[in-house]
Image 1 (cartoon, rainbow over the protein chains, first blue to last red):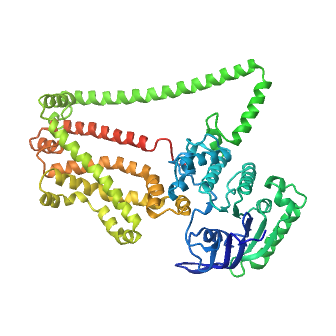
Image 2: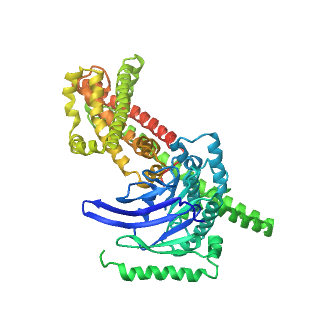
Image 3: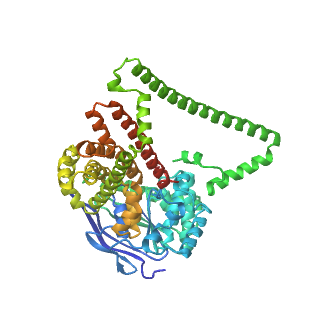
Length: 265
Length: 307
């Protein structure tokens, strides 16, 4: 199980600077994610979850420390890292197929075979034959499925999920959680999920990282038990150990609120 | 977000609908066919009634428009013939029609139309292209945009046709200087509109392509430009009107050919029939140009619309 980690965060600190001054978003985050692992970052708002994700994606360089992907430093966005946003952001002027293939087009890998793969992906996410439609013809859940296909089309090793289900209705959210979970497991992808939803984090991940705020730092890591980990997110919620796990996470966040909240905000 | 579900056409793909159509199949099995047909007839009738009502309203609107136009023209005609208004100043429709008919038949009107229309088309196409190009440069180099911001604001609030004499002396009286005046009217406002749109593109779209490692030129081609097409088109529509102002003012100042020249000439010889009939021609041609731009808009944005 413990091989070389795919993703490594070493002494990662980041400071945001603007006219008002400098603020420390995260401090000395140390984390390793092994191949095929699914981890979640949870925490109160302002704990730097999205900052960590942006640094992992290479959107901007960290102020201190480094991010390693397969042992190499991440300096810019690369096709090896896929990113799914909270909203689908499908381009309204492109068809569904062209939207899903936009990453391939940018990296220059768009050809007939790649387009076939895109069609196969669209079918796998539950949208067979929708390729020539336009985004406004699809519901919110379907659009997020297209966004998933778009992210997977460039065959990234690591997936970063930035609250991709939070804008959806509960029913559709659960369906999509299952879909993402099952696809990532099958393809053996490594994933980092950022979420506000403790149940979602507990049901989908192999490991949950609870972050504290001011500045953002790792507060606690929770390994998820084998039984819950094996089950699909929908089934995991009905697992006997799930409630206890949920309460553990809840208590951890409550404690963070009592200690950290507002004291030095 | 959910109202989109209702807008979906029948036979839509996806898991959510698969569930629905499954339920429909069950209902169909359970239902007696007579009830089914009753319901279909009833719904068809509702749809037919809805369409009939829509058609009725459209017909009423068009009829009113035509009646208004006829009323205006005949009232004008009557007022002119009966000297309720001064026919020397206001002329009247049949006189104008005769004037147009005569000059079209002897071919003397056509060169005026051709030169004015070509000046306008060149002016507004060039104005839009140049404005878009400058906007792109400002977007590409944020430093430039900060430097030029105050100058653009001042230029925009200045009456650019006042530069007319300079263009005429610099470029010589004629086609070039009139196009230059037209450009001076259209370029700045085009630049400002389109550049503002470039900056307003939702950062989420930009993030999507940046995360795929897009270069700045890819970002422009994939997101910024196509996302601004609706604004570019609406600027084009505004520019049709602005280009006409530039051309007519230019012709007032300098030309010896063109519809603006006809208007000034008619004014100098006190032939207001000529002035007004030239205006009618301008209105007709401007409408055609506007419709062409609208057709272009439909082609460019076929299929997609803003959310």
